[in-house]
Amino acid sequence: MVSYSSVCTSKPSYPINLVGNMGQAIQISIHNPSQYICANCEQILPDWKQQEFLWVVVVLQKAKYPLTEVTGEVEREKERLREKFMRFGCDVAFNLRDRGYVTDLIDPRTGYPLLSHPGHVPHDDTAVAKALLNYPVIKNKCCVLVHPEWGTAVYPSVLLSAAPPEIIAQVTNAIAPLHGWTESQKHNV
Image (tube, rainbow, N blue to C red):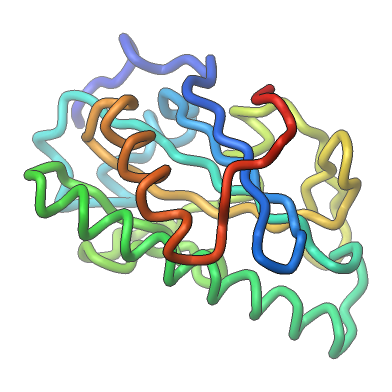
């Protein structure tokens, strides 16, 4: 197994605050991998054995409703947010791949990568967001992240890339407007 211990910290970089065309907030931050990803990288992404550096891009979308209940309305909202992330994430991933950087996005529903061979261990976006952002989690039928401003109305998603954070941020900022996401007037946190 490749050792990622030298890059396993959770200090975020390049925070990006966006707002969608319907007024919903989106927060994106780039991190060194969590301890879980460091310990399980080959089991999550078996194709990535030779990667010396790995960055985690956490994408948080504000939901219309708290995501603690299992109702048809909440499930439709989760699916809507998943689709928004998948479209955005694929564009970012392919752009970074075209630049020669190994990149993938994790399907929030399954926990498996979309563009690489799936490993034996699924990825848990909520657990990684908790570890990297230090946000609490409520455990009921599924684990729900608690955002400091949005409460449980937050949908976490994750991209993984070998690209440097400044390149990830540049690509993210260039692609976000194509998905109706523009820079928020709120200062980056």
